Amino acid sequence: MLGGTFWIALLRNTISSGLMLTFFLMLDRPKFTMKKTIISYIAFGISLITAYSIWYVFANASFVQYAAFSTIFVIGAFCSLMSGEVLYLSLYKMALAFYMFSVSSFCGVDVARWGFNGNLWVDIIVRFIVTVIILTFTWKKFRRQFLSGIDFLIDEMDLFSVVTLFVSVMLGAIMAYWPNLQGFSVFNMVRAFLILFMAGVLQYTILHLYIHLGQEHYYQKEKELLEMNEQLLRRQMELMRESQQEMARHRHDMRHHMLLIREYAQKEETLGLLYYLDQYEEEVKNSDRREICAHQAVNSILSAYTSKAQNQNIFVETEVSLPLELPIRDIDWVAILANVFENAIHGCLDSGSSKKIIQIQIAKKGHKVSIQCKNTCSDRIVFQEGIPKSNTGGGIGVSSILKTVARYKGETDFSAKNGIFLTRILLNLS
Image: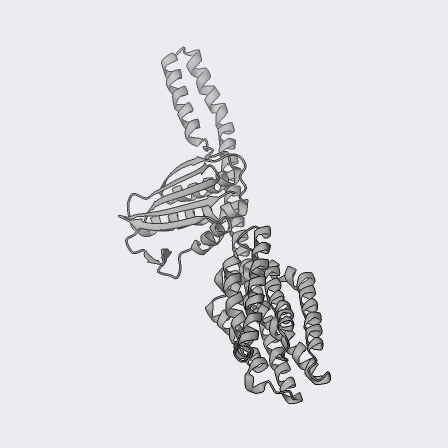
């Protein structure tokens, strides 16, 4: 610190606090409306700047030692409460904001001491210029990149990564603000610059690492969904071929049916003719494929897997009430229903029961879609944090179900009791 009056401290604190708060807000998806958020940020910023300036006047020694470090906790707590993101991501953004504050302070103080004999106004001008450069770059370049990868960061970041980032930032801050190193020298300046530079490179590398990992996992999930969709389409083609073969058989047999009907008619055997027509009508009904629901994607998925289950001697009962159009991607229906049905078929086959049953109910209620599946299962199912785990490693398709349901801010529930496995899913359409 280069000292100065209350008003100098007020101006310096305004630049520093404004940098941290504005930087955080640029990278944030707030919990509240933007108007309410900006008003809250301005009110908090004015209160913070005033309090820190008073602290500077009445307890200058403690302010010099602890003011910089305390901002990360005070501003961090406020920004985290205002943010709509998970805590880990808020901590990461706070670490970035504090790093930018450290760079601005380092540049202002050391440039003023290096060539201008500690001139207060040079310190303030340099801080202001650096702040403008940082915020301009963040708004025009970094913000778009960060927000486009924010969902990947949410998926990948954990406590370890946040601790790593905080350690890197605090190392840079310690070298810039440690009281015993406040004396100016070219060596101290170069050392602080190198540590801040390395901390910045580390943060930038970690940011891109987690975004890259998130993208890899996302593309892997999409690849799995596309493969599952391809299998579903193949199954639909098989059903169409079977249906065409059935129609060809009916056309081929029609000539024989007509000959037999003519024979009954010529002999005036009315009772025999009526009995034969009843048999023929029953055969036609049994060969018709029932449409499960009006929604094309759901109907295709359920039809394909119903046929697959029936080939395994599994009784399937469906009760579906859905409109023709819904704001849910077809590939998401595949991710949910195909995995639920696939797991149900595996559960029935692993149960060892002679009576295998799958019951599926799907309905739209208001702005929500509820999905419920009951199937026969074994008594050896293990749950970990409410998620079923298979003996071979992890619950087939469960992760895809959870990920897709989360996209619609929905809920999932899995349970097993008395040889029946129950899957319940709720999707929000709003």
